Image (tube, helix red, strand yellow):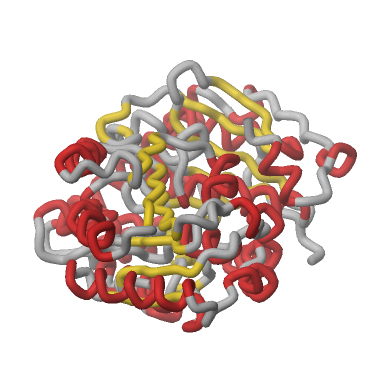
Length: 438
């Protein structure tokens, strides 16, 4: 690798919020920095966390002022973010803007404005969407607009690629599949941590409808009635937590169902190693990094067979079920039988997954994945009979706004930011990186 790029990652979703996108952004940025690139992240302010913060290896994070409307997603402004974004991109001498997640308004606006400024742009999709409901139709049309003029698209699974290609009417040749990864050394198994008198099923998830919490509420009482030595540890928070609490009270399962509430990423391993089985009841998933982390920690996985989940783990590490109550009960019972009679050895999973999911590999492939005005207009015009004309007007106004900013706030008036000497302070392992997040 001879060329060193200056890369700007943009998403509404980043630390201190916790989730797969947030971890992906941080760990990918760390690996790109270790490969010699300069990386900054732009996200919205989280409470008192605003302004500029430095994380491990000099990773600079801009927490910009923006109004959050729902689930940490910001209010779309179209042009309101442009002056601040332009200032940051020029100040940091950015070459490539990399947006993450279709729900992120900052991501879409950054891609639009960066292309107006003549920069390279790419996009990573982390989710699956439908085609019929109003929310999906609007999101897909927005995605078509954004991706009409992007240099490359990355998806985290082949199922996610197929979904994104259909939603945004893309050429499959412009879309790459680069899976998420895991720091295997952070999830070393510890058989002595589990209670031998119980078979423990662990669930770590956001407690929302999409994660299949309704299925979980239905399954837990039946499993507890069928298997007297089974208990559940559930980590995570969300609007569906009240349903789990009511279920626990109704069936008098306080001694067998432990609700931990919100947990930090640094606490995930200590929870996982207490278990024997990891349960994922999601109704839709593009990848599901949680099941990889669980398998690395020495847990056998039971998961609904949805989205990109069947692509993630080898068959001997996981038992699939349809997202239906009876099928899930059967899959969990089969997993309990395998664990009790020693027919699987999850303690060996970590060594197998260590080389399968490496952030070094993800960073290298992302590095490789990374137009004139008339050509941009042509691309946007093809987005639809009416939408195409609207998109052309939006882009033209964006171009004129950029020319106005160039005249009123010329580039020479923006002070360049010094480059952090990453190599001098660089940590050697991903373990060190994660230890320094907070």
